[in-house]
Length: 229
Image (cartoon, rainbow, N blue to C red; front, top):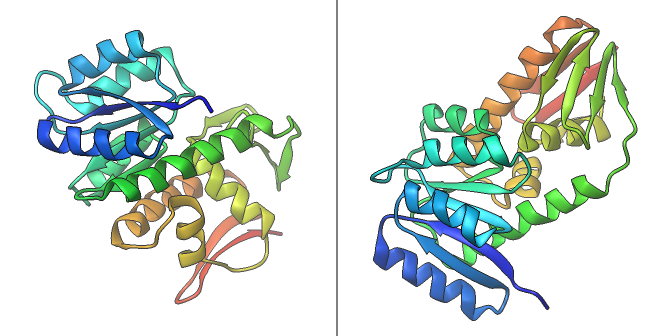
């Protein structure tokens, strides 16, 4: 079996080598390490990875700027941010760069592996979906191409926004429990992933605000409902 090529960008060299060694022992990964954003950017072009995991706060070039430059060349490669921050500032900035997931530091290599596998599984599902449009009221939602369109207004969705909206669509009119949605898309339900979900839901609500017949409702203590009247 061909190994998954993982680029791990982390300025803590000891931690980077622990993660590299642990993941390579699984027999699943071939790991290339880089210790700042500039090295990470160079490694992206030379190593041609299948997936990237990057710290945010790094010397020379930080993770945000590194990913911004990578996304100019590649809108598809799965990227995860590893961070110790839980505030919305980082989540908002990351999702604007079309980052696929966040993982909270500190983490175990086994936890990182679970996050990577979930992201790769989702990306493969998206690549295998058909090109059919889904109609949400007066909106057109295309899961494969990751956009939401209302007349001439078109919103490019992130992979995470696409996943959330599709899961709500599959259960439209019914409550989707927050914990179940978090575990399905993030692999776990905790404070950090819950805040991430709130950020994405707020963005989707803004996109859907042009049609009053479509809305995402929060049912306190239960979950979320996509209503289409």
